[in-house]
Structures are given as structure tokens and as C-alpha cells.
Image (tube, rainbow over the protein chains, first blue to last red):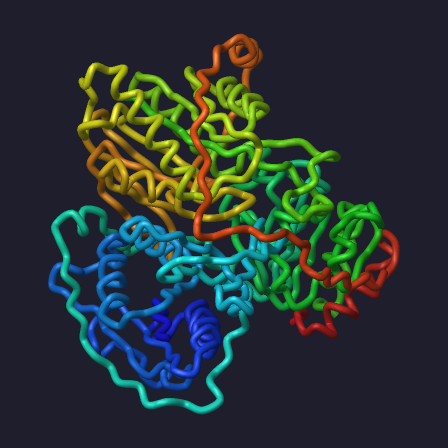
Length: 327
Length: 265
């Protein structure tokens, strides 16, 4: 069985989320003895990162090239995947559960009338040979065991569920160009990429995030968190209640409906730790909570905690760090 | 400008999710229900568009009879019509949900004597969805509806500008930059929280919502190829935090910890 995997690029290499999707796809393909992973990259053949794909066990890579296909066009991408999946008789098509991956798979599901299992964390075959899946609900706060019966399994892979792992041994990767059969309507919706870089990205990649929640008390309380973030070379992130109250802009929100962060240190101040918030910060290496309530859910998720009012603790911490730096 | 917004009733969960004994649902006995966050923003966006361009907002949900509460919440925000596709409480998959929505849209076209604006069979200029439901996160109902109605579709939208009866431009963030989509209306657009900050319902809005009629119909459920077996809470990584201290007295320990973690310069 061939598992076809949509591979997104990031700065010339395979995007981290797609390395995870490839790892998932390889495990799924290994369920049968004749299994293999084929990768699909949108762009010219010479832009395909063949060495990385080789390390991840991809024998066949397809570079989708078309003069009509200049930027991201979700329906056209889905049409290309559908065509390739048919040519290869793929038993499954997988993509990372990103905005692009999820959207393209939804179009593929619509074109084919097949179900799409979104945000999968694990896949295998049960005794009856049916595809048995674990998928994320509530952004990973809840798991669903489910079965998928379909002539072709369409799956997205939850972005933080599978750690990227190279294959036991690299395989030789052959790169072939694939020209999809597209119609005008397939190109009706396409993206133009703006030259501006969006500001939201800094939160996702920050090494230190200082979080503020309801306990901050109001918009005026964030100055000291900004000061602390500055001293630690980090940025401020906030909980949903803070953005819903209009205290801070949404682009600073950490959580299921905001940004997912994975810093070395997440210092969560006055944040209770609702599951929707935790879904966005559980990839943090270290979580330190400052909270007045020793029974707040965040305390059970944290590595370290200070029980106390952040409005007392954080100014004292800022003063202590400044005194230390000044000495 | 006629806008349809599709919303979903989801459990209001806080610090912890509890699953019912049969493993089929989230236990909501200690919580309530709400509208998925992205969708509340979709309703707010629709109300703002109608305030600017005229027209009306219809809000639709597929759910149990009690989902009328969520429709009334959305009427209080400024929607003027509410449609409940009533279920017996069991979970519907995205394919069946999309089919029921498409049937509801088409039935509205009949009311318009075939004089539908925009694409044939589509009585709305805009169909708004939340990008994905907070609970199931399927990310596909809007796309499936768009395909069935032959409409263009964009998802994940954080910024929307439209001109009545003509075109729209939708923007979203992706990979650190912004993607811009130009669209002809009618179109299906799914939005994300952050596109706006939903208003608090006004008192007159709430009173109007309380009295408003809700149109009901009962679509037929059908099974899908993806079948839920059971729900479970992931084996908790309850770390049991090491308590560094209480109040400002904990600051020296906190500084030492930050130093250990290498985040102090």
C-alpha cells in the first residue's frame, strides 16, 4: 500500500510539521509488507529537498508543476493529490493538520465524497483489517478512538502528536515531475502572498514566553510583564479571557484558538489553566506558574509554582533581576 | 447583503474534561454549553457587514432542541433569523452535517421564487463558518458545503472586506506572512477568532432574542465511514509542580531557577 503524503516546505527544507506527517505516514505504510511513502511537493523538481525525504524513507517524490499553478490554490492542490492518488492507487493520503494541509484535505474529501479523519495522532489496522485511528479533539485535550472505513483513507496529522523520526535506513529517493489536469474552476481561489511579515510569528517561536491571564486584572497590568519578558529575551502571551476582554490584541493569545507555543520557559502568571489554554502551551519545556490558587489546574501542569499574587511577585522579580544585572 | 452563519453548540469546558461513563460524550452535567469561539466571531463579522452594507444575518445550527439557547445568544448579538436543524442529540459527522446545511440553504432558495442573488440556488451573498469546531475540530463542513453549492471557499480568515454583491478580499496568516485571497461573491468563508472582538449583547438585543421565533426542521442522520468508538482523556502528565514559595518571598528561588534554565543574561 502506498501512502501519499503532502509535504510543505519551509525555507527550502521540509517543514517540521511535514516531517511529523511523514513519520506518521511511514508507520501507516509499514502496516503492510509492500508499503511505501510517496511525497508530494508543490513546486519545481529542483526545489524538492530529496536528501531529507530520503532520510525519512520516501522512495518516490512528486514535484507538482503547472504553469497555471503559481501560488497556493487549495482546490487545485487537492485536484493534483486526487490525480496522483489515483495513478499510484494510494490507499491513504495524509497531510499535516496545518491550515494548508487541513484545507486541502477538506477539498479532497469533497471532490471524492470520502470522509476525512482530522488531527490523527496514531493509526493502525485492527484484527478485521480496518483502519483504527486515534485522533485529537479539543486540540489534543481529548482523544477519540475511531475506525475509518473508506476506499481511500484521507487523514490529517495533529501538528504536535508525532515526534519527527528518520527512517531506520535512508532510501533512494527518485524525484519526478507531475503535471496535474486542472480546470479553470480549480484555480478560482488562490493566494497572493503579502510581502509583509506578520507579527504573530514571534510568539510561536519565542524562547521565553511570559503569560498573563485574568489575574493581571486589567490592561494596565501588562507593563510589568512586558518588562520581565524584555529582561528574559522573550515575549508576552496571554490567555483567552484577556483577549476577549479586549485587554490585549488577539495575536498575543496562547491556546486552542490562538497561537501554539513551544518555548524553553513558559512563565504563566495569573492564568488558571483552562484546557483550551493548556492545548497551546504543553509543548513548553518548562512551565512555571504564578498563581494565588494552589488548586488552579495550571499548577498540576507546571514544573514549578509560586503561590502568590503576580502583581506582587512579578514586580519584585523584575527588581531582583535588574539589581542582579546592575551589580 | 444576505449572510448565513453556521454555528455549533459545544460544551463549555474549563480546567478539565470529563467523559461520560459510556465514553461517548463529554460530561456536561457540571458545565454548560456555548458557541464555538471561531463561530461567535463569524456572527459578529456578519452583523458588522450588515450594519455597514444593509441586509440581514441568518444564524443556523444543527443540534439538539436545547441548541435553541445558542441560537438565541447569536440573535442577541444581532442576527435576525434563526434556523435549528434538530437532532436527537447524537453526534453528526461532517458529511451529513454539510448535507443538512446544503438542504436548508436550498430550501431557502425556493422561498425566493428562484430569484436568488449570485450563483443559482444560493440565496446568500456570504456563508460564514468558524474555521473548525472547538470540540471535533474536523475543519471541513464549510468546504463541503461550498463544493455542494458550487461556491468558492476560503478558510482560516482573520481579515475580511467585501463589497455588496460583487467581491471580497480575505486575508489570513500563514507561515509568518499573510495570504490574500480575492473572491467573487457568493462565497463560503470560514473565519478564526481574532478577526474581530465580539460585542456583548445589548439588553434590547437579549429581549428581542428571547421572543424571536426559531425555524425548525428535522434532517435525517446517516452514518459515515469515520466512526467514533470512544472518547478518553489522555493519560495526564500531571507533573505536580514543585512549589518555590509564597508571594514575593519566592523571588530568590525564582531567580535561581531562571538562572539554572539559562534565561537570564
